[in-house]
Amino acid sequence: MDFIKNIPLHMDFEGQHRAERLLKIIITVFGIVGLTWGYIIQQFSQTVYILAAGCILTSLLTIPPWPMYRTKPLQWQPARDPESNSKDNSKSKKKK
Amino acid sequence: MHSALQRGNAIFAYTLSVLSFLTFCCFASTVFLDYTTGTDIKTVTVLVKNVPDYSASREKNDLGFITFDLKTDLSHLFNWNVKQLFLYLTAEYTTPSNELNQVVLWDKIVLRGEKTVLDFKNMHTKYYFWDDGNGLKGNKNVTLTLSWNIIPNAGFLPNIFGTGSHSFKFPAEYTTSRM
Image 1 (cartoon, rainbow over the protein chains, first blue to last red):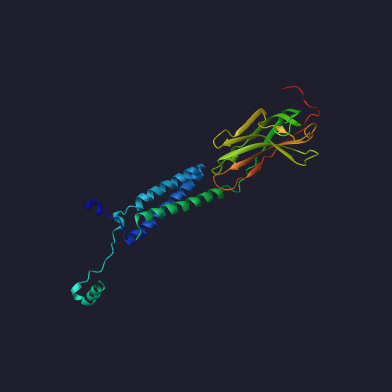
Image 2 (cartoon, rainbow over the protein chains, first blue to last red):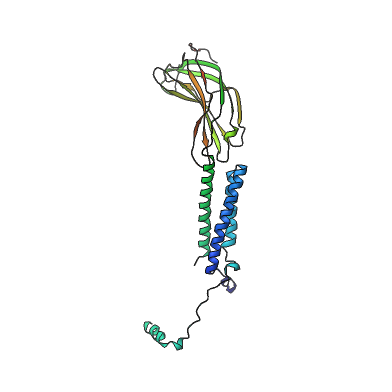
């Protein structure tokens, strides 16, 4: 169970940007290649199939959060020491 | 944060956008093409009978009976935006009661990949050549024209008239014997 919970599911922000750029490039390239090939052999169905292949390839490359999308994790501020900041502490206690 | 589901949605939406653009390119590459071609039509037998039309009024109407030869080459009409052709043969004539009469006598579907050079000899019509009166007997100018609809992947559904129609006349006497 712990093993399943430890599978990373999120990309960092930089990774999301790269994934989105990659999906647009791959699908566009497959679309252009498909259109050219379909025009050469005069079969529009081949164009559609090539685009579908590009869609599947893109899904494999950008839907799972591969390690290459997790190279720049967010640098969180270090957690504050509760005792050094008594004012905040007292406020939160009052609310409770 | 973008989850896997949102990324999948983005891929699907973008693929559909690209597909619609490609379909438009396919349409734009064929929209100005010339889809006319020559047809060679001849009539072989031409008879006219006067028989009751039981499907309508039981009155005796003129029924034309023709067989025809048809020769045409449709191969250059097919491209990546043509799925099939619907060919139909019409007879057009004038009678005293109607300025314009058009009767579809025969039709045929030609799928892409099928034989496109048509050469039919002595073909019977598929549909009855009824006139709604006695306009066929002795009619001096009946014109047969082959036309076709182009069924595309994307775009318009053009209706093209073949060049090379054939005019013939019906005999001035009814045929009474059975054929």
